[in-house]
Image (tube, helix red, strand yellow):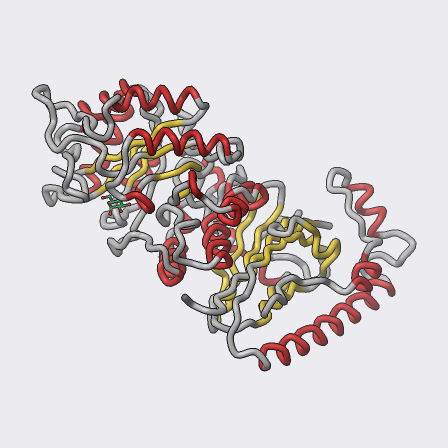
Length: 481
Ligand code: GLA
């Protein structure tokens, strides 16, 4: 286990356009509209559960049903985790005499249609898995190559809501052709089925992907390396980096998919799982739980049920956060949210604690911009009026930042009413001197001094500690002017 891998994730919701995030990459908001799906699926990243990461081929209908029950009883379903997705190994090795896929009678004796009814009765949706080849990756069941229309009709008749379509054991033809064929078959089947393409980026080409995206989700599960996610820190960090490359292609109806979540499977620390969940959320990745929800610990559920993090993932603007910079494992990720807000992630991947700073200029704000910063893991505000930059100290327990009370008392006059711009101006230009007034200058100087002292204290503390676990701290914030 990697000691000291820490994440400090800071969410800033900033009421200003985030121009520094390379506006040209995001200019496609109008473009995104054209990809909005007529069938209404995947307008925000899909959320739910998938059987593969925890169970692999060891699944059956009881597991799926009791997982659906658990999604409801744990409150996860109410938070948006609606898809109950069966991965590989659900079918008989051979098709029936008519060439139809058949559920495996030893493990799914009631059949998929009955399972879909069970799941639907709980207000959930059912997902299934197939492959653009002759057999699926497990080699235990047929793929859909050459049977696209027949299988799409079968899935629709069973009441399936989501198809993950893999790329194993095909005929060597271009993935474009094979994946498009299923896309059209699903359209012809006339049921809104979210289409999750798992083609490992081998045929990545925006033109054909765009056509497919009109029909549903683009799932880029293994990102060109043909390596599935593992329940390990190095897997999470490397997949995040690869997924980052494709950030500008994401948008409503077309999400990059860095693979299913490993949160709760036991291979990482809680801090690392918080990092994993946070980074997936801001990358607008599908949030597909990959553990056994029925026996999930309180701590695991606390991560998965963090509504503030989920809300960032489900933000209607649908822009994938991107890495702005990285040095010695200290990273800044950011992306715009709706309502002129911005999300910033300060991520410490190194083995030692360190302060990470993000300047307002880097994220497209004027340095004097006052920013409300909120900790979305602690669900509390860090500052109501932060200016110039934000520095997060990631050290043994130091990420539980407490901003000096004096700082707050200096800046409390910049109260912002988010609904009422006039009032906001009135406050800023009020009798205390306004944002450029004497008190503001005094506060800025004081802020800098306090920050310098706290960074110094932190560094001294770091030097006295050889190794430690850093707790993940998440700060949520908001703001404006
Ligand atoms: C591939 C996929 C996995 C899973 C397995 C099933 O490896 O990338 O997510 O679906 O196939 O065999």
